[in-house]
Image (cartoon, rainbow, N blue to C red; front, side):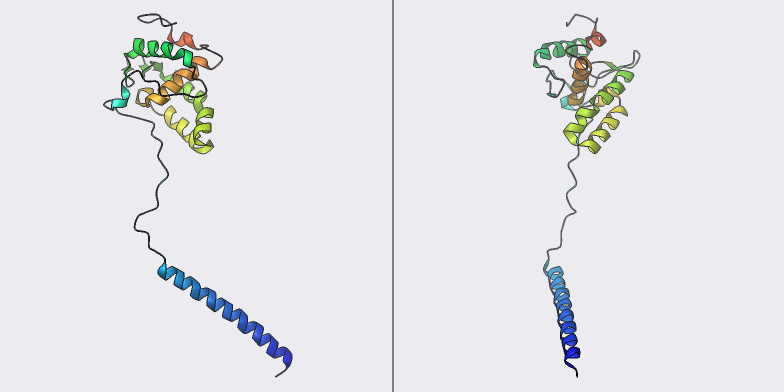
Length: 177
């Protein structure tokens, strides 16, 4: 046998030996690896909506503290909240077409969800924020959690500067401005 042929056989056999060892190591790893007993955890769900009897749907707490929130408007916000619905976030006035704690029309709620989209994308990331905005648009506002209703109110109220949208809530039983 020539020297060259013996050298080639050694290279071939060492390559083959390496492949056999890798396969054996993989087999051992698969045999001793623990078998998962539960499915992988799902990503955390973002809660957007509530039912009429959910305890979170009453009260004057103001959970939103985002881009359009102004601390000096807290009393104004509470005043509108109490004047419009007595702090019942699930309120509806179907005959007049108003929904939610701040009594938005359906069109204003849809517009507000578009206005909120960039902030929602900053909060949840582009894809999830876009989906949240779509889900809000597709659902009557009185079903939105208080956080999103207040977010919509503050966004419309301050979209073009402090209290630029206050005219949407003029009038009523008493004046809040």
